[in-house]
Image (cartoon, rainbow over all chains, first blue to last red; front, side, top):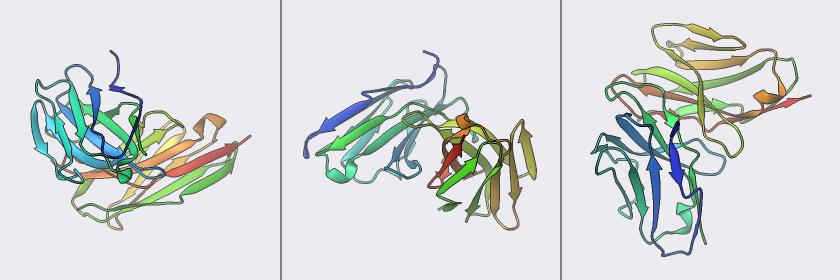
Length: 115
Length: 112
């Protein structure tokens, strides 16, 4: 596809359920990021991949959050035992380069609501 | 880590007037400052960016200025149009730091 694709666009989960959010970055993009965007706030960094290597996971809020990108393309963000405070839009972004900041291309996000 | 503050949080302007959004940052090592526009329910999209080796950059009706000494940068939109209505985010990152730190956003409403 032409842009970053995320699925599902909307997810409602009961507290305690596990969820998995998928990101298809732009083909050939080396860098992949996950951001969390709470209502009325700017995106907050969660984790960064360079190809299949997860180089930074310092933004993950707890050990219930896990991300992977096993083949250096598609990435999955998994949240175990969801809590109400996990409710947010989860944005995936990709970038062509690996070594320096460049334009981030965002997906439309996955809106997670935890009841 | 980097802390980016953005003001105002909301801005209402008459069509044709100018809009200015200001951001400050804390990390003096930051050298890349992009601005993203996010329409309701849509993805953030880059509209302009500036690196620390320049003080100003323009692209048609949009301009960004940077004051490294004071650690602040601003977005200027001239001759605003209804399609400029959106949330605008500033961000900052340092060289070789792939992470962008975002401001909280400014909701711009252009009144017809």
